[in-house]
Image (tube, rainbow, N blue to C red; front, top):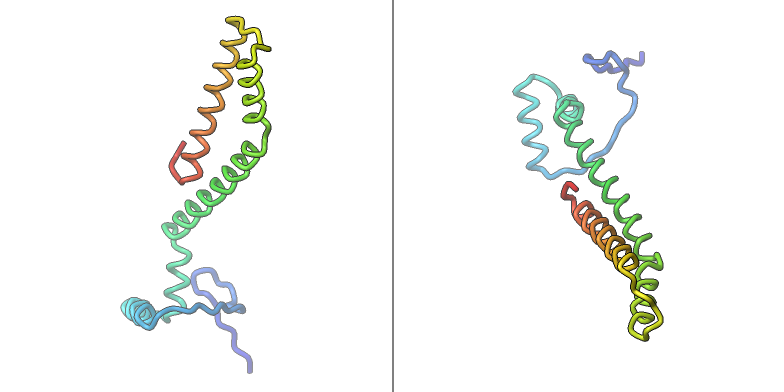
Length: 132
């Protein structure tokens, strides 16, 4: 006769297993906690993994990692863009005397510079895990 084990909290069959390598000290600590609650070690571990606090921490870690990946993609695209090269060409043309710097042109260049610097600062802060 085949007996199935059920999760009492959810009423679902426990039909899948996961192998987890831990130290002997961790195993003893988890076993001690499980014994205090009069439950199996595996049930205690499942309970701890399913707790709201654990889920909240996991979601925070995942969102941070996703954010870092997004920032990395944006920084990579910004680095591959021709903005720096175009600014360098503009500076060279200005040094040679081929650009007429009207107050409007200077204002537009300064505004573009400030925006790019601001975006770069935000991206670097975000990529390091700090809130933007």
